[in-house]
Image (cartoon, rainbow, N blue to C red; front, top):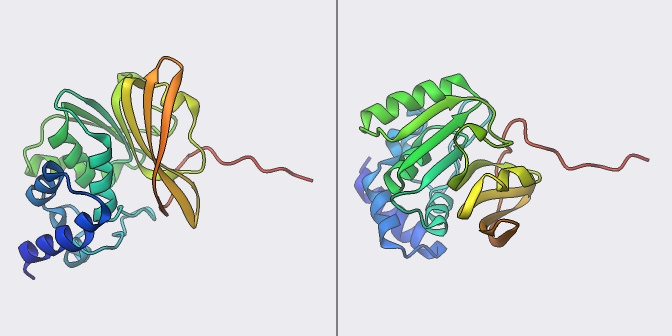
Amino acid sequence: MNFEQARSNMIEQQIKPWDVPNQSVLDLITEIHREDFVPDEYRRLALADVRIPLAHDQVTMTPKVEARLLQALEIKLDDEILEIGTGCAYMTTLLAKSGHHVHSIDIHPDFTEQAKLKLQQHDIQNVTLECGNAVHGWQQSSPYDVIVLTGSVPVLEDHLQQQLKIGGRMFAIIGQSPVMEARLIKRVSENEWHNEILFETDLPELEGATQVETFKF
């Protein structure tokens, strides 16, 4: 398979038409080869417009969602980043290449161990990998300039937003299947956040996420 041609097609046919003209994002996606991160059995599908299955009933985002996420967050070289859900470590690598340091937390030890090997292979040294449940936040290294949730949550908890620095940005997919909202949340002051809906999508939820309260009759 010609991955370079497939990568060019992915950028021209999937990512750019999805309102991602940012050249630094496109350059980064060209530089970091997505097929090196997905499970071997799905390597040929790595650049397709599909969510790649991972262990523990998890999936990747699609390439166009990953690109839109990076563009929306406008990550700076001195940003401290929290990634909730390491997964296959592709997004971890994109974030690490964009900011100063990434604290990537996953509830599954095998994801963390596999990510360690992938990051070593790509000489990524500005990532701290930890195993734990960060869906309610990760106080140890807060506050953060950027927070990225790589799975969905039915509701977004206030104290997760509190872990953003003033001027910080968060990407989260919020709601219940089949229609969820991808949102960019910016902390503009001590007690004020700006909430922007970027697009609608659908993604499995992070384990341990707070559920929507339902009324019982």
